[in-house]
Length: 85
Image (cartoon, rainbow, N blue to C red; front, side):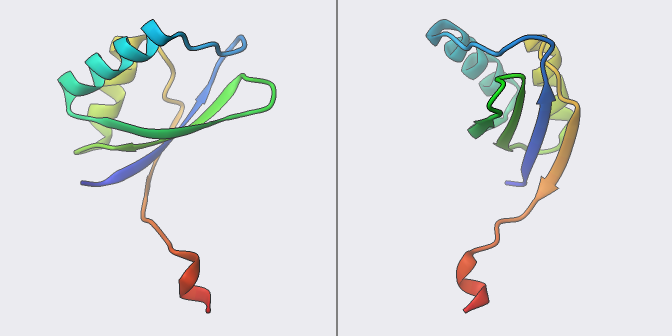
């Protein structure tokens, strides 16, 4: 399945509760996307999230339903550091 990085910018610091995580998983499952992991900026106002999804539209649909931003969606491929040796 294709992978994407989503850059999200938040107006306030992000705090995600366990209930929030369950809700995110439920919505993602319904639209067919999988949240793999995220990086959170030091000021807790920006995330970079890696997802597997059939397409960008599925990611936008999930973000809209969750009422969270999806400012930039970039298709990505994995590169192993071993290719440089």
